[in-house]
Image (tube, rainbow, N blue to C red):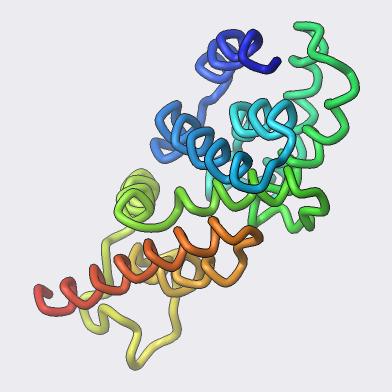
Length: 208
């Protein structure tokens, strides 16, 4: 059923998604792809998962914004207003709102439904692996943060500080995401991508 609404959701996200380079249409498309794969494996309600995946970042404050932790909740509110404007079936809206509100790490809202857990997994998976490292660097470049500390690149003698150094963010957040996955497929993909990131850091250590 959702397929008939997909073009409108895509047009909406293109128009309203205005934030950093790591949160663009390509990110949304990857999250939708992952969410679809996981939802099919879990036999979840696609009429909830797909609109939530498409619209999860329809509002996203910058990483250094004072309201950053409210991004997912505000995005959920905005998404529901839009879905009502295109007459999306009311029976799915509450579940969609929860799935969007709960997807973010910084939001701190626990994913209660299977569909919310799937959208959360899909979004977090896109922060891992090769694409995860690339997105991390994109955001840090916009914030003008150096890749690593010149005196102690891997924080062996200092406290990790991802507000100052890009690589520190892998240690403070990204390498820990695999333990937060909800679904079996999410856990499997997260482990593979985390292992790649660990290999990347090992290679980086040889080069700096």
